[in-house]
Amino acid sequence: MSLDKAIFTRKIKDKAIELGFAGVGISKAERLDLAAERLQNWLDKGFHGEMGYMANHFEKRVDPTLLVDGAKSVISLMYNYHSEDKQIDKSAPKISKYARGKDYHFILKDRLKTLFNFIHEEITPITGRVFTDSAPVLERDWAVRSGLGWRGKHTLMVNPKKGSYFFLAELIIDLELEYDSAMKDYCGTCTRCIDVCPTDAIDPNGYEMDGSKCISYLTIELKGDIPTKFEGKMDNWMFGCDACQDVCPWNRFSTPHQEPEFLPHPDLLKMTKDDWNNLTQERFSELFKKSPVKRTKYSGLKRNIEFLG
Ligand code: SF4
Ligand code: SF4
Image (cartoon, rainbow, N blue to C red; front, side, top):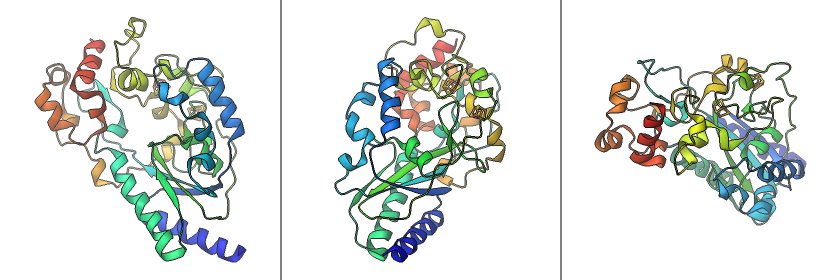
């Protein structure tokens, strides 16, 4: 059986890389006690803001065996979205790299299903589920536990050879596999992400982030008005924010993604500040067809642009 486990594990990892994932690591499916404590603490401080869903299904969120019947293994996967393309007008409101192309949920889901079917049909019959930001799963904690990187001071996962611009996804299945170990933290004395954060959302000692102050939350999750205390502090971000990742020294190892679906609409990076200020519903629909930006709808993006002034 242990020989089977090793062979199955190797085959799954090879297939994941063949499907375009940048990394794959595997953990035993069990309750994440430390992460549960940290999540509870974070919720108690109100750092989730209006993201009430973060408090829902708490036990399922911290224990995959309650989420997926018979769960034995969590297979964590990384998918690169890094791009070196820049918006041409430096005064144009900024859009996070991850949101420039088609919504990653669709793209990753197809690949996850392919990997799931490969295991089921070509290795051994399994049951389980695939996830990508789609259910209460502590994706970052699983990826860290599976040795794909460490939890940086900005709280995102950093890989020492590839940086941090990755979407994360998981398969939770009822098959025992060989498990990886977490790696060391290589942040050292660096504080660049903490120092650059425009809204001081990251704790001065790192490793904790007040989600309710993060520009990603303010521009995407928050439904009402952006509080006036953030006026002049948004660093010109209109959808998401990459500031803490852009300064991370480990992102010098990032390489551009090879996913055609993540390419932006040809006009997106050419849009000037004036173009954004005069954005119409029609233009919004053209630029952001199947994009994650649709989440805020036209009215939300307009709110963000107007807030930047
Ligand atoms: S994404 Fe931006 S606002 Fe959020 S923690 Fe990072 S630097 Fe701060
Ligand atoms: S910027 Fe520095 S402190 Fe922040 S995650 Fe990267 S290495 Fe760690």
